[in-house]
Image (cartoon, rainbow, N blue to C red; front, side, top):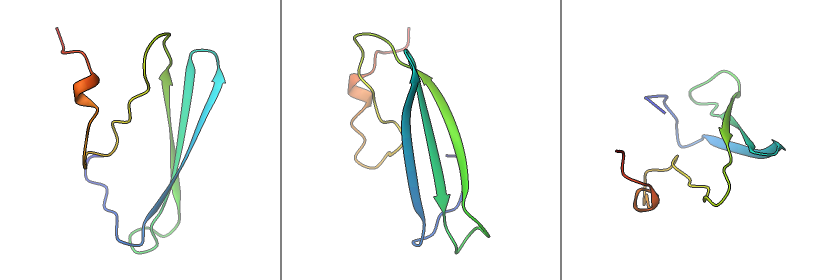
Length: 73
């Protein structure tokens, strides 16, 4: 998210799982043969809370999430 290069040949495959109540697991595999010698993956974990929406904050192009977020207090 902070400067990892990706070429026009890159693909990102995401897998979303809910391994237990209140827990979300997001696994992403990056495959970019122009910049990396082999695919690599990472996993992120998040909490799911009742009466809230899941908000995608990854893609900043045409970003529409911020209007749904509460202002920091």
